[in-house]
Length: 285
Image (cartoon, rainbow, N blue to C red; front, side, top):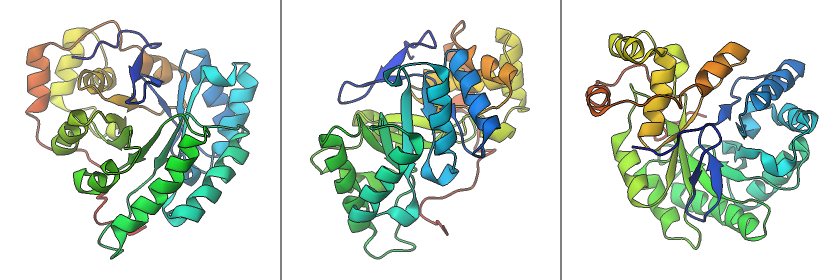
């Protein structure tokens, strides 16, 4: 079971960098004052880990919120991702600089390949992923990024990158009680790759499940808090997203209780449900 017991606690990455154990996701948050205000609220509640991406088109707002917060840059762990149309060596370098420019910072704490190039679209998918990774490795070695990783990679996507000079430190995947991805989780655990959980609440699709409702009543918590605590107890880092201050606070209120072995076994026995349906081996974007 995870030792994270406070919002300020962190997971150690393979290179020793500490990453705050609960992130604030920004997917589908549009660029503009509402997003700036939401991120400022999250920071005021104690979140110190913000996850964005070039594809989200809100990096400028993330940067404005960080500057308006008054917090020093090094106090906030900042993640972004290179999008599919920018895969490859030179495009990744250019995309990274554009991300820095939009965020208004001179470094990232974590940079990820958003989706793997996959065999359904590219005969040379492994070479494309390696070229993208080579660019990210050089940026990491130059001190422009504190840690590098991937998103939505399965074991067969990861294997080629594990043979490189700097292997991935993070794999951000869809992960919640209805999408447990046991093979990928085990593969990453064995190799010291931290799994981050995107959509840890499945956009609400799992929250009315009778087991999660029952566990919430047992612990005096909401089903959402059960999901997030469960993610932590799997050794993964959840990235919930909400623009509602009360929900942000609720999502952070998961450090004063623990799921017991019976709870964990019951969740482990759940069949798949509530997943997004996104398959990295069958991408059409």
